[in-house]
Amino acid sequence: MDKLNLYTNSNFDRLRNQVDPLADAAVVDIVKSPKWSDIINQWEEIPSPLPSEIPVSLKNYLQFYLDQYELAPQDTLKAGQDFFSKEGDIYLGMLGFYSLPYCYAFGDGAEVLVRSERIVNQIGQRLSETGTFVLEIFKPGAFYSHRSAFLTCAKVRLIHAFSRYFIEKYAKDWDPKFGRPINQEDLIGTNLAFSFIVIRGLIKLGKTVNQNQIASLLAYWKWVGNLMGLQIEYWPETAKEAFELDKLIRKRHLRKSDAGLRLIGALRNYYKLSIPDPLLNRQVDDIFYFFMGKEVAAALAIPVKNQIPPELLNLIFKFSGWKSYGNTKSHASIQKMMETQQLEQFGELMKIKIPTLKRP
Image (cartoon, rainbow, N blue to C red; front, side):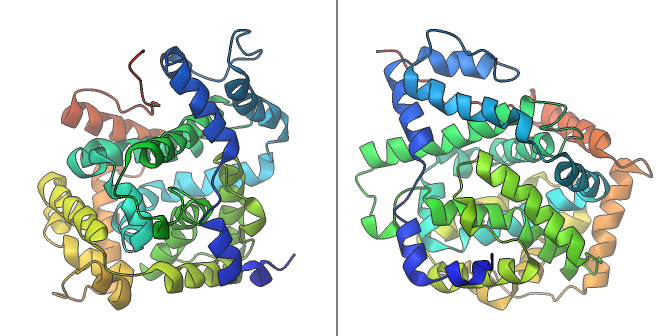
């Protein structure tokens, strides 16, 4: 089916008020019975069968994942995992320097992000958790040989539902014009930022990414998107569809906002203080500008200083990767490096956990 006919303002206006009923109902159960936060956070994978005493809505939510176990498209997943094994360090770099700040430029979606104090005040831990998530879902054999990735997606989806629950219940400053918190349009846009925008970043660096690779990565994130609660009938199948979808969302939401400026300021300061490589930490704004371009950079008040040639930035990223991995770059080596950095910086490995609530 040609998805282009779906990419209209009227459809996406509706998506701004649609969320994720399955996950939202599960969170209501957890709020009523907080012990399940601790139980789920202790699991290594979703158990089958599920505990007999589990609340009904939470059981229905987790059963969705158990039902997916036999449906994993192995060829699609293997192709995406092979791509990540070759480009994973650059892929993570694109997330940090392009995908995440790109999301900050979309004013209504930024309103949710800025309400998470961890994104602003514990940005290092939050970025590391994002890296942990991406490494887990791209681990060789993820979903078809290793089932822990299902639990990872289930927990991140619940974290989104918790955010919706607390914003809608307690955030007195939430404006309905923003749409529902973490709505379907924002979920689709974030998924696009973690896939198509990464590809666009690689191409900006001068890397060759063919149409088959683009379609393969989009198919990978369609699978992940379904596990994250996206309405995947809107998900693009081709580079053209992805381009048009991104263009529509940009037209609808790209704007300067106090929330976006606060988020990019926190990210900029963190990079300047924490990135050990002076080739990168001295040019943070220039790198942001290189990837995001004039329009998006203006929405984030990123100053124009030096125009970095793509060949030079590609060499900087390559040199940084070579210093870290030499000629042995792989998913395993990238994960080992990330874990070493987490231990050095935070004294512990970052794990994805759903909120632990105080018992009544």
